[in-house]
Length: 71
Image 1 (tube, rainbow, N blue to C red):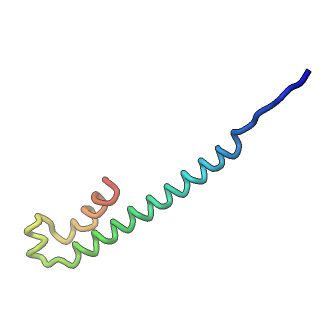
Image 2: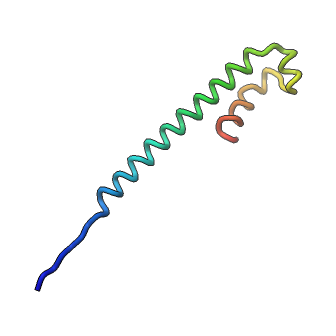
Image 3: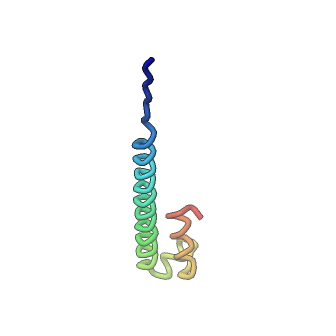
């Protein structure tokens, strides 16, 4: 009598976890870059330009958080 065993789960599981971690890290970096870019661009605007957008300086970080992270 002969028995065979197939085992394919280990490599696929580890690879999947590693790729999920890498994707999460790259997403976090991309979101942070968008946040910093938004803060920098809004900070460069004059008070009048911010007023035209309906914003003031105290709102810049909150607006950037919403833009980058959807909070």
